[in-house]
Image 1 (cartoon, rainbow, N blue to C red):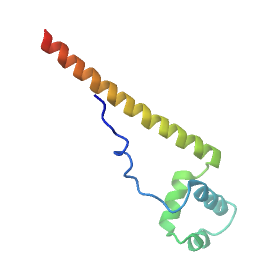
Image 2: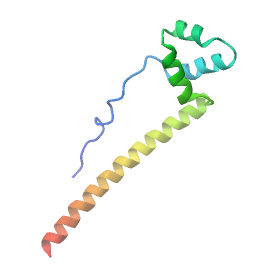
Image 3: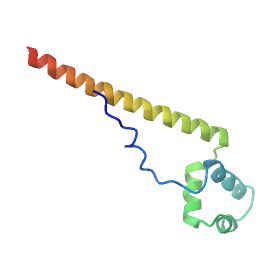
Image 4: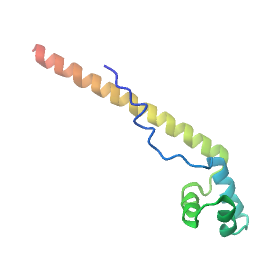
Length: 99
C-alpha cells in the first residue's frame, strides 16, 4: 500500500531569485558594496537580505548545489522510511490477527 507524498512537500513559497543570485548578492556585500544598494537594485527589504545572509553566508554556488542535492536525497529517504514503517505496521497487524 503506497501513499503518494510528492504533493505534500510542495507547499514551500517560491522565490523570485535563484540561490545562485542570492549567493552573488551576498558576495557583493562582502566585497564592500552597501547592502542598501543591493536591496534597492533587487527590490527586496533589508530584512530579506539579512535573512539570506544568515542562511547562505559563507557558501559558494557549488556548495549550495551540493546542499540542495543532499536535502533532496534526505527527503526521499524520509519518504522511503515512512513507507516502510507503514508497511511494517500493516504486516505486524496482520500477523497479530492470525495468531
